[in-house]
Image (tube, rainbow, N blue to C red; front, side, top):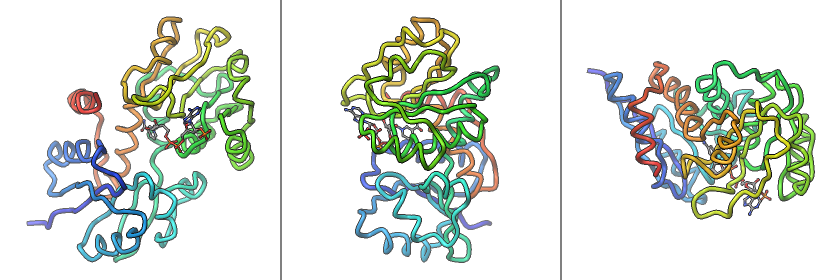
Length: 275
Ligand code: NAP
């Protein structure tokens, strides 16, 4: 009998993570022998905590807040996508060596491709709200999907300007976000605004062409105020929970050598857990 493939998500805090539900669902669905746990590692203990996982024979792990950048220093190899995004969310361990990957850009784009198969990324410019860690992955994914021009706006202008310079985007002032909606083919919220417990996202969608796709990567609540307002105006919308599901697929494949599917029963389970 094969020894179980041991995997985990590391973070601090990590108890809220939905990743164990996703990966354990797939382990059971595909009849695999393996485990996926949530392991809390405080920032000061990262190197020692990872060393312990290697010693215990883990095949790899996901990385969440606050370790996505710090883990890079512990990786022997970092794949070009993770290097360009500047963060690692997935690690594979082979012969005691860590290889870092980032699957967030894939998750964001793949979710749109599955939810809106007819959507043409090349048909016009996109506007990204926010310039945090998730915005980097979204911007990278949109560039890979050949979006002709990507605009970015953020409360803290220095952060959007820095990201624009690094990834070849156009930075706009946060106060001009409403006017900036005219002629956009895609609007993505990557700020924490609109999330349960956070302030609302204040945006007037009047200038946005009604054919434009509106995405929110916030998934608590599942249907954010932005998505409700966009639906009322007749926009196609894509919810954030799908990105979480799709970013998990290549990670699972690195460890278990099976690319799993996002199925309605898994979506249902996750929606219930995310409420
Ligand atoms: P982060 O690095 O902390 O960035 C937070 C972003 O929100 C920054 O752009 C920040 O602007 C902005 N923001 C926060 N409070 C604001 C306010 N009061 N007014 C204006 N802007 C504000 O976080 P992150 O990792 O990018 O995550 C952002 C959101 O995406 C979270 O809700 C997270 O749960 C969600 N997310 C979802 C997925 C998924 O798979 N669906 C994946 C990753 C993240 P400043 O720079 O001005 O502070």
